[in-house]
Length: 423
Length: 120
Image (cartoon, rainbow over all chains, first blue to last red; front, top):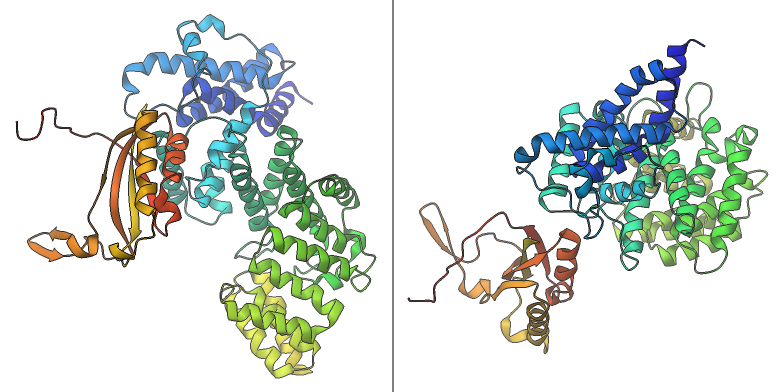
């Protein structure tokens, strides 16, 4: 490999692994997320030339952090008088040691990077005072280092819309003084829920793209897995962090088998289980066993346990359905979501028959909260089909089609519908 | 320290005479706590909007609150807090949150305050 190719690869690797680390540390000096972002971007550009000239440093993240922080300090000193337009990032008292450093640039020496800095970044991006779509965009930009243009493309909005959303969120952080700090123990459960919610949303958005031609958006799925792994590294003792990582791993383990060669959606029972990623499933299994030990298991651990039971069965028919129903009952008690209740009806149909499940789906229909949820008529249609009520099944398949925007899912439903007509 | 406004919302159709016993006392206690901790700058409770509010939009004067909604502003407070999290903590303790209403927290940009006694 040529020298420059080697450097490029090193910078790319440092970008993927180190971006959040470098930005988090720089934000504390810049006390402004925009300025921090700019300095980090410049530091990566400087690494390309610097590393070609001087060789790749032993600790690329530390090199980049020092370079970015130095730029931030220069900017702060230069613009001190102009920086009164927007308030600075708020940090809790007693942690602003860099205030001293600003007047002493020599104080920035290459350093061991403190990994915990990244957590502040994650928590500020996922602050509940920001709308979830803004949390998602900020996390992708600031924690994952994805460019605004790429985020706009993957989330299917225009670049101007995404840029405006990002600017608005950063402005709120600054004007409303959302602090750059770790949550206190008392607020941690709520705050962590928001973080896990964003990572999970990122995954589900990628796992079944809300609209468009392909079922899976690999880039979003990969980012969400990377974030979940990072969070697990930063908060190794949180059972729900383990649970979320397990859930993503076990769900994504089936990626290769979810569609056939022509991109058509396959039902779980029709998927080729030999294509499943056994090592991801094994990793998930260990995380789940850990998560179920001691204390009342939370939402993600339980969801992961359910997904894992589905995945570990030798075939669809030999799945441990009664155990799945039990886990769903537990899940409903910690997370009473109508979507969970709907998924539970599928397992119920395997234990107590489709008629019993259909009655439960009817209850959910009355409840009304799933009125726009395409999987409700889809589940209903399948139960009706199994009961031999082909006309009612057709009506339900049509309702599902009306609510579905993903092409692969639409094709699947159309086939079921026309299949019924042929029968 | 920054200043935040806490706008207190209550259900518009609640009759003053039906107010749960102890509700007023809960508010008094909450604001006394904030006076003692030094967080409170000022706080005001307003007369019921449905009965007493008058609104002006352009040339038109109308009877009732400015925005026709299920919840109306019942009062407001200005507090001092180091950051949004601290302000939200104060706001969350407001009894309106548990009494069917809620609060909105807004950072204060600037303001005026009379610096002489009334009528002077």
